[in-house]
Amino acid sequence: MNIPKTLEECYTELENLEDLEEWLNLNDKESSAVSLSHHGLGTWIRNNWGLWEGKGELYNWFKENEINHPDDMSGIIITSFYRFKHNIDIKLDEQINDSVEYYLNDNQKLLRQRKIKLDKLNDENLL
Image (cartoon, rainbow, N blue to C red; front, side):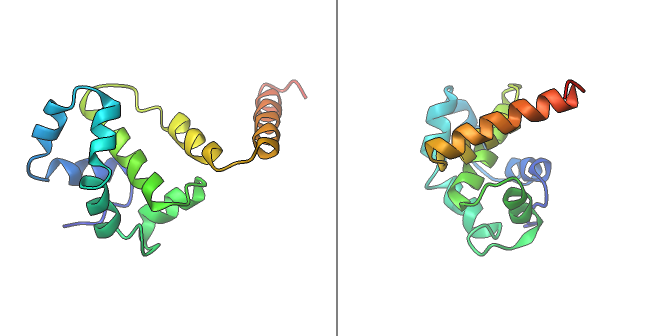
C-alpha cells in the first residue's frame, strides 16, 4: 500500500480497495455515502495514511489549506472520491471553505468574507 501524496493519488489508492464498487453503487446519495463511510473507510484512511500521526505530504497539504482535523481530511477525501467516481464537480475549494468556516466564530467569518471580497477586487485590479 502506498500512502498518497495528493488528492488524485488518493483516488488511485481507493480504487484498489476491495468492495469499494459496492459502496459506490449502494449509496446513490452523496450525503449517505459519506456519512456511512466515516467510521469504516474514513477510519482506515486516517489510520493508514498518517493523518492521525500528522505525517506525510498529504497531511501537510491539508494543513497548508487550513484543514486541521483528520476527520475533516478524510471527509474531504471521501467526498471528492465519491464525486470523482460519479462524474460530479468535486468543488474542492467549497469543501475546504466549508470545513474551515465550521470552526470559525462569527467575527472570524466576517473578517474572512471581507478578505475574500478584497482579494477578488484586487485580482480584478479594482483596488
